[in-house]
Figure 1 (tube, rainbow, N blue to C red):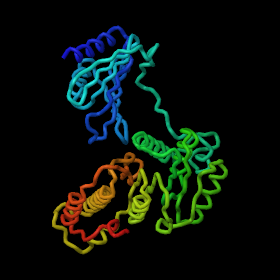
Figure 2 (cartoon, rainbow, N blue to C red; figure 1 turned 90 degrees about the vertical axis):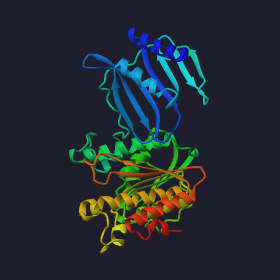
Figure 3 (tube, one colour; figure 1 turned 180 degrees about the vertical axis):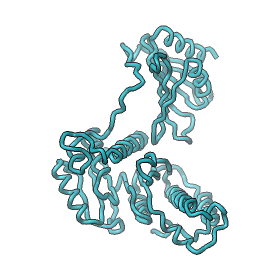
Figure 4 (cartoon, helix red, strand yellow; figure 1 turned 45 degrees about the vertical axis):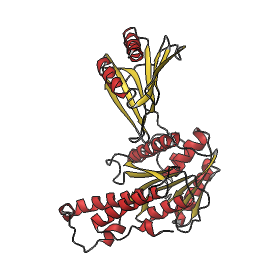
Length: 383
């Protein structure tokens, strides 16, 4: 079609005369794989100019490099089939190619958004979201001079990865102007403080934070640290998750809450109709204890290490399905590389308005339980 040919002609021309700035692919035809946008820009790799594609997923970004021919072939596959809008930015003009639901193609030309090209260096430093503020020093992550303590380097990477994930989740979450964030099982508060600093101090969001922790010494430490940092809307309470009465929660966080404490936190979030539930489960004991002494039918489960991993997956799959029963879109993904922590799986639920197919979900849950000889998942018992 002539409109698509016009787009590729302008791309080739922009690449050849060095006026090409970037391409943005947006308005995905479907969102089942979580891919929201693709950003394409020129970068220099080993003295050769190539196209760097950033695949922006709901929970992370992935980068791949392509030649001009490869990028043209990729775009031909993606346009209309995967994305309905492609905008080509050059120093001469902005050119938009758009596909309607019925496949009708239209184009639009506008004045250039860019007067000069951004740098084409491939080694652009990644901006960490965790600023080297006072809280990191008080929590023992950095020294007085702001340098990260070597043994805390993995913790600092974990903090930044966590903020990146939350940032991406919030871009696709409809929140009220004033929000309440509750962190259940907040521990020493590394991630609680980091998220507060990022959302309140850096992004200027109106948010109040509450950390729930059963160990009084950690609660006292965190409250003093929050006061010393001037984090006025961050407080911690000495309670168990069950003792906390959930009235209003916009974002519920439960990272590494042990065993069924994760389920208690998920239930509190669903009970409060939280917009976003973010958990990193650990210590999956409930299902293992329930099946102790039973001979597994699947030969894979004969081996202890496989059995442990399998029951972790089964436990979190059932959690995800139960969350879907309560009108949440659920996602399970790797939080951070397991070279930094073994507890690296994140289970996220985003509140949805979609009608729930309860019958189909009930069938899936029962099939999983039957396949592994499970009588009941703890989260099912909470009401």
